[in-house]
Length: 251
Ligand SMILES: NC(=O)c1ccc[n+]([C@@H]2O[C@H](COP(=O)([O-])OP(=O)(O)OC[C@H]3O[C@@H](n4cnc5c(N)ncnc54)[C@H](O)[C@@H]3O)[C@@H](O)[C@H]2O)c1
Image (cartoon, rainbow, N blue to C red; front, side):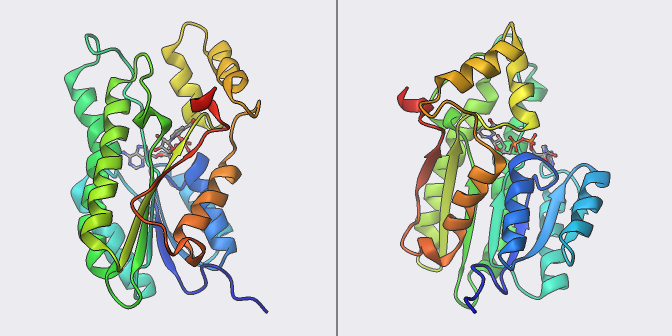
């Protein structure tokens, strides 16, 4: 029988209790990975840990340095190794530059950007062991394009790509570091994002119409690319930001 793509691999998946993170955690589990699930919602996290049996849910805030350290420690305590980080936690920090409170700007950068540095800092010593590991950052097309009322979001997502490339350079060849840049994907976050527009329903529908492929993405679409980018199938890919957007950037 063919070996599962992630058999014996230990992953930390952030943002695992919802949307794309949940889709990714489920796919990695189905392909044999052992998973530390990170998220804020305890009810959803505990239910998912039951569904993906053998997985461990650790609730907390990725903006907190010690929580990131703990995710790594728990992976080592539970499974004895660490191979993959899939980093999906994200918030929007909605408001234009004049109106966005400074605390909200800082919070958005903490959750979307600094958290990636924190967890990488503690995880990389383990990812460097044995055959090495992979880090996959969930960025956004907002890294390439401005959206009204999303200054902190756009800035943080652009900076994640710079950090991704820097870590790819620093830790090659043992660790591959890549990013995915989704367009509009049907998750709770897109509906929050639509609140920045006068008519949220119309904003989501117009995003859908604006894709060349005439539909929103699904967490499953994203999970397929994530699986490719953390598995041996992409063993010659590092330092790359892959757009997965139904063609909206070219529309
Ligand atoms: N949905 C889209 O259209 C879209 C497009 C491009 C990029 N993204 C990115 O994809 C990623 C996943 O978002 P999603 O669309 O699945 O939305 P989502 O709201 O379903 O998931 C976001 C997850 O991040 C977690 N999270 C937020 N703040 C956190 C914190 N402080 N500590 C711990 N966890 C925290 C939430 O609990 C949730 O599980 C995000 O980074 C988002 O920026 C989303």
